[in-house]
Length: 320
Image 1 (spheres, rainbow, N blue to C red):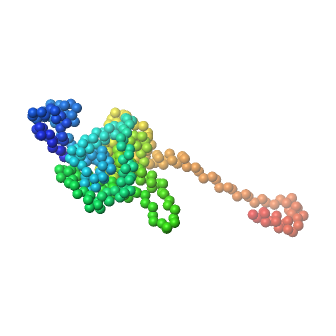
Image 2: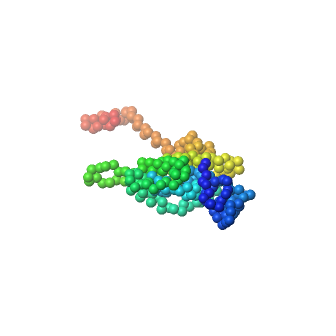
Image 3: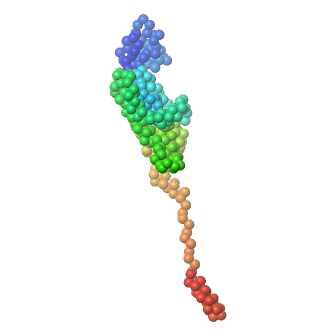
């Protein structure tokens, strides 16, 4: 992990950390103790370095903030450190919420629609083709090239996935009626939701509403974050096992889908196939063919009194 240097000129702490939030304590000398409310407070006056986590940063930023910088990361070292810090906290809260049931609302619901318009306008491709795109210095790339490279990879994954997922009508004849594909539109909207708020997938795990599209989108756009969240969920599951705390069935179903491993024996493939078979209707029995009636003496006597045409019709009805 990387650490940012402190930009407080009065801070002489040996460990690197982002801007000290206790400037008032630095008057006339070095920062010896941080206030308990400061993110860098530690007992004994030591300042713990603030680690930078690219997975947490992408989780906090979301696709819109990642993409709108064009070829630039659109981040300073300070804003990246803040995104990392907030992302670490947000991931911890969401993982906890999966099992506790505590709800976490996303405060920027408009990001999805803005992201949709951004992609419709050409998105990152239009910015890259624009000769003015990315001409300003990339502050994060200059200060921390490795972290900037991680952001660039995340940006490319998100844009390529969304660009390929966009529903595009095939070219038709001049007077063809345009027909929308509801399934493709629904899948694209789900991808936009995951792109704008990656941690919303954990909200669906919590609510028992996770779908394969959510998992596919998260794994396709944020592969490193998906692996990171899977590890955190696995750690939380082991902790619940030790405490003998069992999540409700809908959560176990969603965890099975997210992690790709059954959470109990009822969610294995054989058990699910057996459960589904109870709802499959058996085909109705085939109708039996009527047996041919053997003529009796009374039938022969009656047939002798029939005309030639009536006898012919009677014989044909018996052979059918």
